[in-house]
Amino acid sequence: MNPRQNQQNEAWIARVRQPVQEGLLLSAHTTWRIGGPARWLLQPTTPVELQQLLLSWPTGLPRLLLGGGSNLLVDDNGFDGVVLDLTRHMNRITLLPAASAEEDGVLLQAEAGAGTRALAHFARSHGLTGLEFLGGIPGSVGGALRMNAGAYGGEVRDGLLECTLLDGEGNPHTLPLQQLGMGYRSTRIPPDWIFLSGRFRLQRGDPDAIRERMRHLNRQRRQSQPLAFPSAGSTFKNPPEGPKAWQWIEAAGLRGAWSGQAQVSEKHCNFLVNRGGASSRDVRLLIDRIRERVCQAGGGVLALEIGIVAPSGLVADDAPNNHLSSHFQAS
Ligand SMILES: Cc1cc2nc3c(=O)[nH]c(=O)nc-3n(C[C@H](O)[C@H](O)[C@H](O)COP(=O)(O)OP(=O)(O)OC[C@H]3O[C@@H](n4cnc5c(N)ncnc54)[C@H](O)[C@@H]3O)c2cc1C
Image (cartoon, rainbow, N blue to C red; front, side):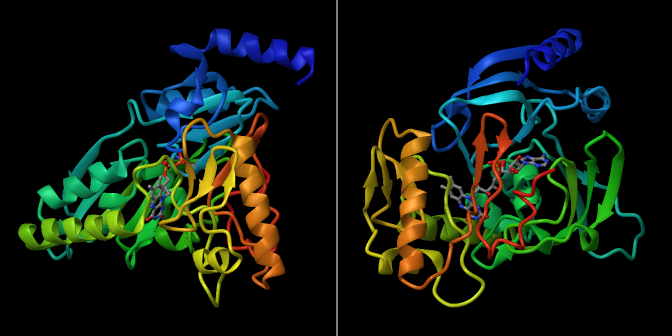
């Protein structure tokens, strides 16, 4: 960043009318426990406050939407821009009144900063079925909407009706599900748009059966995933056809492989775990090694499911088969 731009950014941040945190270590905000400092971090309290920030945002000042940090590898040198965190204040979950008596199901609205697990438990506690699969997925509703998170046959898009978003300039939009372009761990929403909330239509179900299903899914997760070590879940997307990513990694002989303090999990080869003090470089080297070896084994270039955050922002994934993802497109 050139000195003039730096000065402009500093003058802007000095004018922001809300608490600014400086130099916060992002390793404390990612499930991998990796990542250097964020230059600045803001936690807007309302959509209007967030909109005001976007309306005056200085050209060239990088920004990063951070949810639960459960799908991000942040550089050891940190992020040289503004992290926007909605999880502190914009995290309400509410039941909405039905528009008409004939309407099927129950409407529920979740703000982007709400936790996905909190959303699943909110639905359960109101006897609503359809979001049980979210009970074991870490992170925020915003991240889950952006990623179309899913597990065990369920995906966020299944019960979703519409979302409210701000575009890059701060203009509000309410888009129905069909316009979100949700695919496998992706949406077609431009990378600089911000999810504010999602509205879901859920069906009434038996509360005991809902609780039992959530417990069952969590048991399955504990059995198959290395939850004792920090990770970001599955690192790579499954290729559109053929063997799954973990099968390719296994076939490439990399189960249990190390790079510094990062390791391909023995339990689930698509999880790269931090065995204590791993750096982003350790993980990136492991990612490169996996891609190279899987390619040699005939699996093509595995596309990343995780996002990589460099000091200048999200890095585009160059995997040729990642065309479904808008997650990494340059803005
Ligand atoms: C142990 C473990 C298990 C996991 N299991 C699963 C699983 O079963 N299924 C699955 O799909 N994922 C899984 N994940 C990955 C991860 O939890 C999901 O992708 C999750 O939805 C990411 O949400 P987040 O809030 O943590 O997003 P972050 O990691 O904070 O961000 C992810 C992306 O979303 C963007 N983003 C965040 N909030 C917003 C917003 N409000 N508006 C616009 N963009 C936003 C970020 O900029 C980034 O590009 C797992 C992760 C872990 C650690």
